[in-house]
Image 1: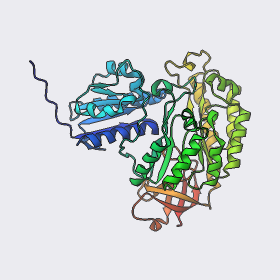
Image 2: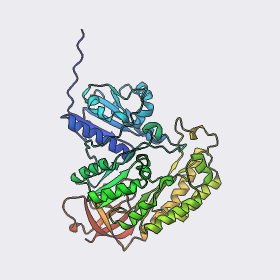
Image 3: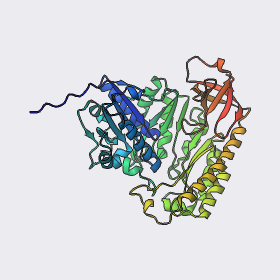
Image 4: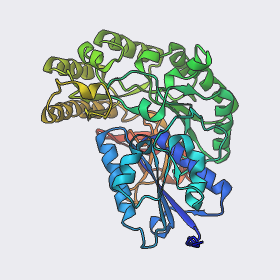
Length: 454
């Protein structure tokens, strides 16, 4: 009988997590499993790692390419100190067989429904935790340890998994399954654990956050969840991200208008406003309905900061449709906005449509939309000059050690602009992150500048 080769003992594990905050939570759960079940060291220095886990994103072409490029870059270190390459995340769910065939340097795959198998994959007890023929277990990962990877200024709480909306351009349901909510009790427990680790700001995330609880028979699920979190934790800011226009609950905004700790902020990815394109997308709404919706949000929460995203060049989009979207953005005066060129995704209905604007046309429309938004964002930031805001100061600015950076409540982490602090630093505690009062003294299209006053 031939003896099996002895693997080098695994000492250090590194993680690269790509994509959205929901993917980041999965990465932190996997690291939490490793920390709880092994004695390996988790390292930020990938050059020192014996094992590297690449947690992939497969949302659009650009994200898939970034994931592949990252895998290939790590694979180049095989035999040069790197013992094992493990690939996890959304691309594994949809493209596992392709990845296995094209990148043989990958040692193991871990699927979204098998996060608990990460320990076996790292230690070599299992080669494959993502079978090619996959039946989703519909599992929700609750009450599991997490390793926070981005400090304690903020953390994400994933309130549900999957999505049941029929958007024709989106492949998320193919990767993450149908929508299912966690229980309020489990979410409060996890939030309390995050608070005990020193987290200052809690951000609720999901594919369809505003639908939270509907599958559990709740009528005002997200409102009830936020009320429970405000009652049972001490986070100074509780924020929710990613509202879906078809599942808005106005009781949520009534609560936001009353509760100071419930951040006056809403990220509602509208994707388009033209009735024609929305029909192609199989999304609800119309320009008139969206105007009424934005007006009501601002009526219920006068200081609300609004963010949205749009897609240009979607199948069926005409110059008239784009014009409607451009006019809407000019009217709505969003605080923050992103725009993306349509990306055809495998096995989606939109990818089968024939009437698609050229890539050049879609890019030109996106640039025009973002130029408009840049002028709007600058004007809205200039209106803040001379005002004081509550802010979270996170640390030294990435570009220069002479500035600190942070965020005011209208700036969500990672997706919006920043607060740059150039005065009053002596008023801050030695240990950051921390909350402070800041007066805005200067404005830019995305960032604001200010000094600490208290």
